[in-house]
Length: 176
Image 1 (cartoon, one colour):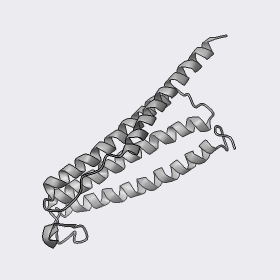
Image 2 (cartoon, helix red, strand yellow):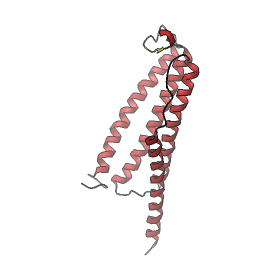
Image 3 (cartoon, rainbow, N blue to C red):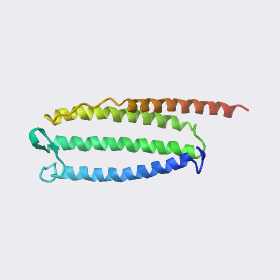
Image 4 (cartoon, rainbow, N blue to C red):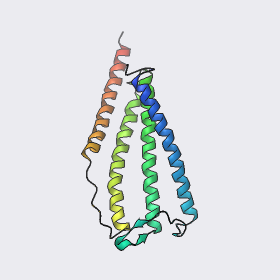
């Protein structure tokens, strides 16, 4: 099976990315409606009984800042993943068209790498914020994900490979 062009592995992966992207859009819409409902009900604990965080000694915490922070963190994470998927879909459109070294792919891959790094950093910040907002819960700190950081570096290296490929293609087009 071919790796580029119509009917290739890249076109199959593009289809998978499309399905995941639109599925995540539905999830993002549901989260948005949940956040709107939470704002309308002003985080009244009697209205959001199903959302609670177990605190120390079995107490249940439904403080507005905890629930608000939870909605913000989830919303930022989902937005980051949606942008990553959207940029990857655009990269795979060029792969399916048989044009892998399209100049726009460099910026797309750089953005994907930056967002992946941002999501990883956000994971540490959410953990630190939870220490301040929900004291008394025994928890271990987030471990440093070597595979996650390695993947981020690979995406940045791939962006540079695509930049070099685009440069070589431009030079070849100028050569007669």
